[in-house]
Image (cartoon, rainbow, N blue to C red):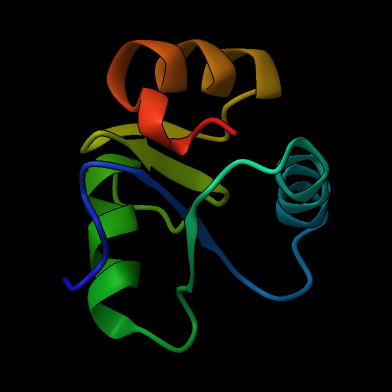
Length: 89
């Protein structure tokens, strides 16, 4: 995949209320990230399935290459501080 594995990558899909909520919070926090729609990227959908027990559970977020399935904003912030501080504004 072409995304920056050292940073924050958000895997999402249209119509997912959890994705909408997390993406809005990330925008408000001005956290640098790459966002990938898994319905438009079969490789991204396969990656999500590989870390979510075969399911396309979104949002799935990677921080510094480590995957988190449906993380809270608090979990995400802690991971960014530890794994990808360059993504925090």
